Image (cartoon, rainbow, N blue to C red; front, side, top):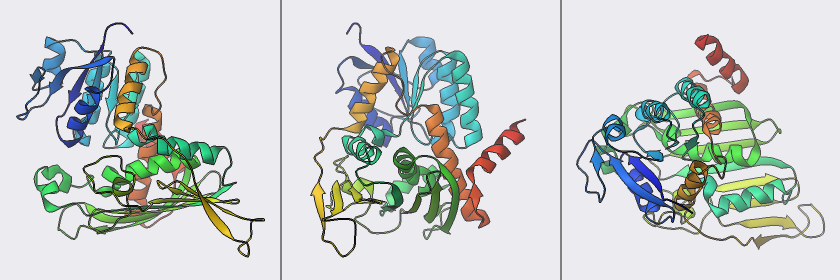
Length: 351
C-alpha cells in the first residue's frame, strides 16, 4: 500500500468530527492536520486557517467541512496548492460559484469530490442497482419525505443556520435531490412551494417540490426541520447512531412492474400479472451494512492514489445544486422552472 495518505480536516464542527472519526478507521490514511479557528481538542496539529496549514505542513488531501459560504474559497485554495479536496454538500452557496471552482480544478487537473455520502451507503447502491436492472420496470413516480424536528439549540450553537440560504432546502433536501438524480436521471422541470420559519428565522422551515425527469418520471418531495415525524433518512437508515432509529421508510419508488421502499428494502410486486385485482406481496431484498462516511474516506484515498475516479465529482455536485436552486426559485416566483433555461441564464450572465 505504501505510505499512508495524509489528510487534513477543515472545520471541526458536527460534520468535521464525523470525518475525523472516519479517517481514524480507514487503513491507509492518517489525520495529519485540523484547521479550526475556534477552540478544539485534537491529537494532531491545529491551524487557524488553510493558508497557515499549507505554509507549515504538507497534506495529500483535504476534507472541507466548513459552512457552505466558505466552500468555494477553501476549495480554490486547495486546488491552487494542487491538493485533491472532498467538499461537504452543498458544493457551494450558488451554482455559479461552484462552476467557477470546477472549471479551475479541471484546468489544474485536481480532483474535486462532493460529500453526498449517501451514495456510498450499501442500501443506496443496492437500490440503484435494482432500479437500473429493471426490478420495478419503467420508473414512473417517486415520493420523498424528509421531515424531522431540529431542537432550538441546533440553531443557537451555530447562528448561521438561521440565515437565508441555510434552511432545510439547501442543508437537508440537497441529499435527497442528489439521490433522486442518482436513481432517476436528470431533472428537466421544477415546481415548488415553501413556508417561512415558524421560529422567526430568516430561512424557510418547510418546502415541497414536484420534479419531472428526462425519462418522464415525476417525483414529489417535501422537507421540514420543524415537523415531528419518523419519516426521514436520518431516522430510518440507521446510518448514524446519534439518531433514534425507526422501522419506517422515507423513499418510495414506483414503476410499471413493481415498487421499492427505501431504506427498508421491500420490493413490491403482483402475483400472476400486474393488476390491482391480483395479490401484491413484498420481498425483503438482502443488503449489507457499512458506514458510508468510512466508505467515502476509503474512496477518497483511492482517488488520491489514482486508483479510482470520483463517485460524486464536482460536476455531479453542481447538477444537484442547480436542482436545489431551481426549487428555491420556483417557490419564490411561483413559476415552472426549466433546468435547461436556468443553466442558459447562468451562462449568459457569466458571459
